Amino acid sequence: MKKLLSIACPCLLFAYSAHAECSTNTLQGEYGFTVHGRILSPDGTTTTSLIDGVGKAMFDGTGNLTQEESTVLNGVRVGGPANASGFSTGETGTYTVDADCTGLITPDLGPGGTRTGSFVITRRGQAIHGIVTGATINGAQVLMQTYADYERLDAR
Image 1 (tube, helix red, strand yellow):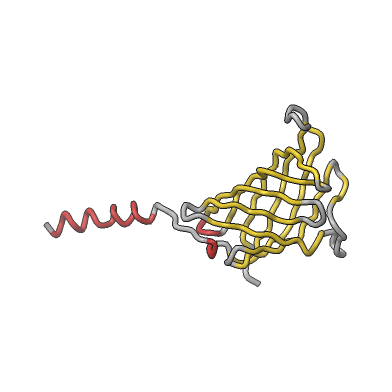
Image 2: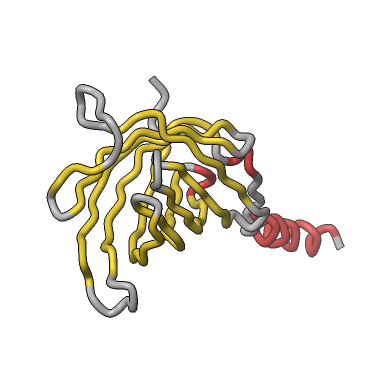
């Protein structure tokens, strides 16, 4: 019987560890991110603008975030006042994380600009992959087809 138990135990441990358990605390620290996508016409059939950006987000482990980003829309920088490196600063937001490592993020990008997104956490909290599910620009709702990828920054 001992032989059977020793063979079964590694399999049981593998099956148990294959299921990720996440919480809001899984996202804690600084992450670098990229954003790429497009703004669509109101009926969603035509691309009206291309979006590319990079940034840094700080997740506090309790559901709040701050971030700075440098984003271009059709090649022209957009966003609030920029620091010397061209990054809009002072952006804040909230996030939630479910036990299955999926979540929601809502950054406030300044007056009239918000995004809502869905994401999945991978690599034990080292990476996040997300899509924009809703957005406003200058207070008006817009359709976007945009994704973002985050990676935890190395400790300094």
